[in-house]
Length: 234
Length: 316
Image (cartoon, rainbow over all chains, first blue to last red; front, side, top):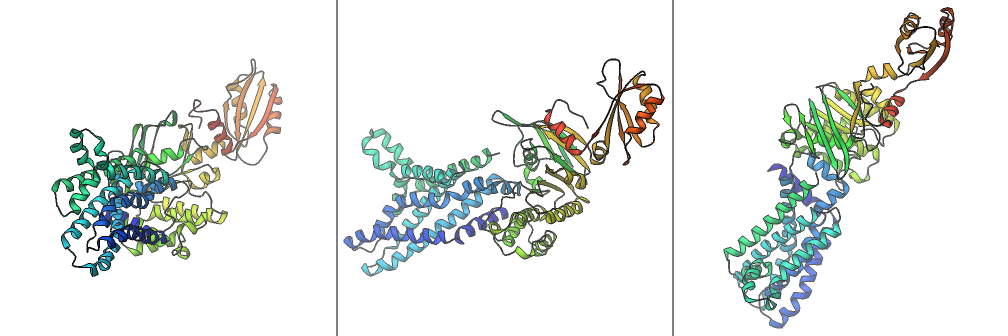
């Protein structure tokens, strides 16, 4: 456990010590605001629904971007050799990096709480959907982060890692949007595999255990894939 | 301490290490020698558990590296080739991180290691801004931080300037008094000054394995004189030359021309033996057909062994 924390601390500090971190966080805030506030002023209701609606899309871009270098950089520069020969197996390496990635996810999400201050004048804020939204956002982000880590574990090229993770995340996000074209018996199945659908459920304030099971298992599958990715290098 | 048994490793079709076996007892400094691509780095990576052998096994002490990698990693200090480390970390942070990964929290240990490797002046510089030599020393500090029993150093002096090379060699020698050290290099004098034992690999196979003293005594600064005569048997010739002053060893050369007897003679000391040999041969009434002298250095051994592929084996 201590090694996991050591790896996580190193990874997170390497991210937060570079100016890139703050550029990414600022950009994330800015882009969300640009898309969220125009619709907010139309409805003029004290809720973050517009923000949460677009979040899966923005996460699909931003989370692969912050995770793409986590392993591919190690492969490319050869530092993976020092990491593996330290007392840490592939599982601990992935666990540590994932923990750091969740910290970065928190770093992306936390500043968006400022939006609450901005929408407060429009009326009383209903805490339920806001809480649900952030809870859902965290679980959604955790799953997309795992996807990003997985993609990064499979290549020494950050761009390839980014594009791979982006594609997977976009498919997961929009899977339920294409269901009108499908025969009805497939709809239920695909709906269950759609991250967008489960996120909406939680964001609406419905704490359905199926949604949590979905996100946790999605994360686990990709994390196990990432562990295999590191092991395959040997 | 290190036992490598029948280890083979392929990369696709390319066989990097081919059925390699050796064992290194505790407290020995062993030089792993070979040209580029001979399988030195691959062998070291398998010892440290970074790469898995395709076949065979590696044991450190009583522990199988493949079966219990976690246990072994605390026992090994590894300096990878080119010393790849996180460039965005300060030397101090990096050493603290490495120590923490080994479960060491003592700042005193970091200070000791930094002093050993003469890193005090660069502790607050980023690793990526260091010169090659300093980077290499960071690598040594990284390998030493947890005071391991076994040190695996992949080309520890590459990229260092002559003063640093001497310094690092001194350091390795000092460490080697109590620990088991395996270093890879293609710098031959390094092996002569540092190692108790030399292993030469070529095309993934061990082509020579002997104590350095033996290897240099046999091939080192001494010369080999080849004598070919007619009129006596090889045994007589051997007998006749052995008694000469300054002759260390005489043994028959296998490739005598028909009707002639040939021996190889190694000398000790600076004196040129050729006049004495020709005089002796003449006195005995034999006819001298060949009298040639070759200077043998470790370089020659190395080149001979690594060029003629693996088959010749055991030449040393």
